[in-house]
Image (tube, rainbow, N blue to C red):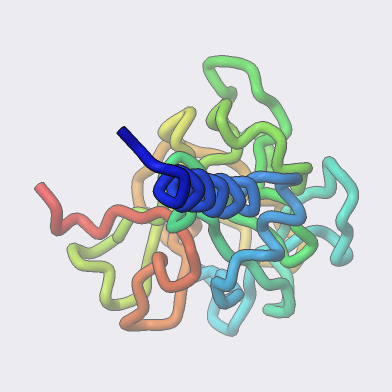
Length: 198
């Protein structure tokens, strides 16, 4: 049987644990800003010079198209906080999402920026999938967990403004995304599969 001091200690311990859990929930945008993961750009391997993906005209409104652009847009993940949240979050606190959430997801469905309220439904869950085993060369395909399709450049385009869409995953250059070489996506909070775990 617990005595007064032990009951108080137990209650304080439980309350401290609940406070920690509650600090990780809250609004998705606030939660993504509170996590201490470094931000990074996500560059295309299909382009000769450094081009990355980001929201058109640096927009932050829901539905803003994700396009190929100069490398000035920053992203990070949330997977190391909750293993069910494999979102890719823009510095604005919004998530990389599919414009069409029907099932099955149509080929060439555009990618957009959207409030992070649909993470549990799959259209906002992404896994960095190593192009080569181990992923140490920094080349990754970005696979959607709900549709098992990959983010790629529409019609293999390489011009600034080319829309990102979902396509069957085949690791073509238009589906290869670069993180800093030698760094695992988990450094940035992203979920990943480096091909080394059976």
